[in-house]
Image 1 (spheres, rainbow, N blue to C red):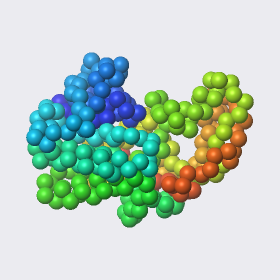
Image 2: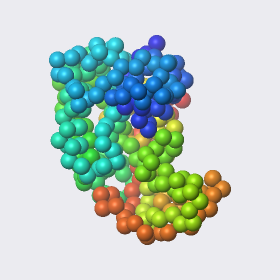
Image 3: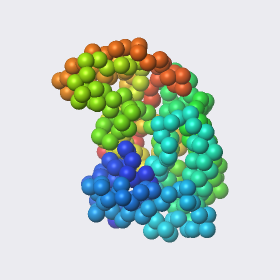
Image 4: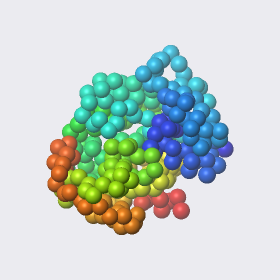
Length: 286
């Protein structure tokens, strides 16, 4: 039975990734910084849980051995989101995460899947393919993009497989309470008459988190397609249409106060992912 280490196990995506791995009968080693939070998860009794706070990273530890020599590593952990502009992404997260992943590969891990972000593309608009040059425009994106580049250099020396999963937008159970749909649900629960939001004309690429988790597993558990891989739907949708579709699915109504908030200055108005590479993986897995 193949063994998979999942870091960031208690996060939005990690929870779904672990449940799907268990459904596929993989042996799961789960890790996060808080065992108390992990104990609340439905999967806790079915995995081998090993805590790790990367702020306490010790370069003298063999982390491949510490995590019982996994066949695959799915590295989802990343601290401090959704505060995209904070300098700690570059100053603290980047060196810690690189040191951890370098340690794993130096000690025998040969298959590494790491989540990146669509923000690595910067302010480029339209359909974004993995072959595009990156122009990260916030600290989070800079840190992720730099981590990828350092891993690619390290890969030349160590020879591990690297699958860099560029995440686009996602929604579903467990999402951040400050996310768009979480705030909308809160407004509906309070029976508020109006929901304040941006103009809603921006186009984005959305997937339910369950599909994001399934895509990550499709990518991580194969060896033929490596490098940067967009995790996306490939279909743009206006944010206001996305919200209206969500309300219709819930058979809920609330007046949308469009234009209340300005558009974010760290992302372009219209962008979505090219999903050809992802679809090639899915086709091979069928």
